[in-house]
Length: 454
View 1 (cartoon, rainbow, N blue to C red):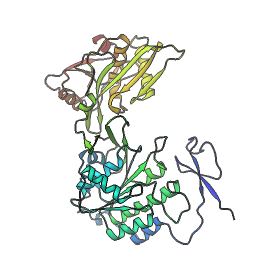
View 2 (tube, rainbow, N blue to C red; view 1 turned 30 degrees about the vertical axis):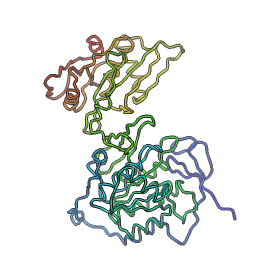
View 3 (cartoon, rainbow, N blue to C red; view 1 turned 120 degrees about the vertical axis):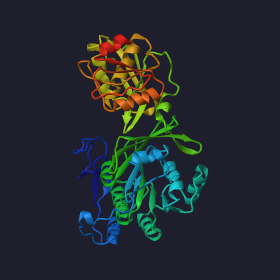
View 4 (cartoon, helix red, strand yellow; view 1 turned 135 degrees about the vertical axis):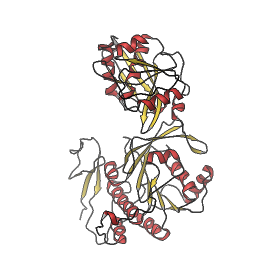
C-alpha cells in the first residue's frame, strides 16, 4: 500500500493536501515541501516520552511557587549577557541562528569555558566528532573538567544521556541534524524540527536545564521552520555579519526575559570571538575627513547609544527611472526622505541615482537617523563636505519639520565622548536637557534651516 504524503510550508508550517507554488496562508512562494504523513504508531514520540518523565502536572497558586534560587547566571561574555537581558535564565530554551561560518559554534564553545566553573555542560554535536570539537576547543583556549562532549544525532540517545548526566546547561549543534527515529521524515524537515524542539523544551522546563540550540539559516535568510521554532523557544538570537568583515553583531528577535532591541558586538580573530565593548569607536574607525556625502548620527540599541556613519552618493542618472539602492537603511524610508528633500529642501534629487550605505553592517531602523541621512544626501548633491566634528540627530516629517527623539541626553553624552563638538538637533527637545560641557547644540526647526546652516 502506497504511503500517503503531506505538504508543509516552511515559512508558516501550514499543511496542504497537494503541492502549490504559493502558500495560501502566508502568501510565500516556493516554500512548500513534501513530507510523508505520520502514521498512527503505538510508541510515543520523544517529546511525549520526555513529558511522561516529568510526571503529572498540577496547578499551583502563584504564592506557592518558590523563587529563592537565582534564575539568571552569567555566561562569561558580557555582550551575550546584554542581549539575553542580563544573563542566561535557568530552564530557558535559546535558539541561536545565523549563516554558515558566522561563528555560532565558536560562540557556544567559548561560553563553556566560563560555565564549566560552576555548572556541568553537555555539548551535543551532530556535525563534528568529539575529537574535532576538542581540537577546536584547544585552539580557542577552552578548558573545563565539567565539559562533556557527545557526537550524536538520535534524539532518544541525547535524552538518555541528559537523564544520566543531569547537566545544568545543554548545547545542541545543530537542530537540523537532530532526528527522532519514530518519525519517517528526513532530519531537518519541519516535522523533525518541531518534534525535536518540543522534546528539548520539555527537558528545559521539566528538569530546569538551560538549553542552547543552534539553527542554520537557509538561502532566504530564515531558520528552517522559523514560525514553529520562534513560538516554542524562549529566546531567538540572530548572529549577523559579512563574510569579508571581521565584526559580528548579535541581536535578539524574541526574548521572553528581556528586551529585544539590544545588540552585542564581537570581532572574529584567529583565537575566536572577542567582545567589542565600544562599538561606536569601531563603527567610526577609518572615517574619511572632508569628504562629501557622509554624516554621523547616534541611535539607541536598547539602552546603549551607538554612533553610526551614514553615507550617501547621488549621481546624475542615465535611466528613465533613477536607481535607488540601500544597505543598512530602510528602502521605503529612504524614498520618503528623498521626496521630502526635493519638495521641502529645494534640491532636485529626482534626477539622480541614490546609493545609501551604513558603515559596519549596522541596520538603522529608528527615525533618529533621518536628519543625518538628509544631511548626507544634501552634502553629496552639492558636493560639499559636512564638518568632521558635527553629528546630527532628529526625526524628519513629511512637511520637512524636525521632531525630537527619545533619550536625547544619552545620545549627546555619547556624541561628546567620541570627540564631537557640534550636534544638529531639533529646536524642541521636550524635557529639560543637560548638554555636556564643550558640546554646541545647533537647534533647527526644519531641513531648510539645517541645510542653510551647513
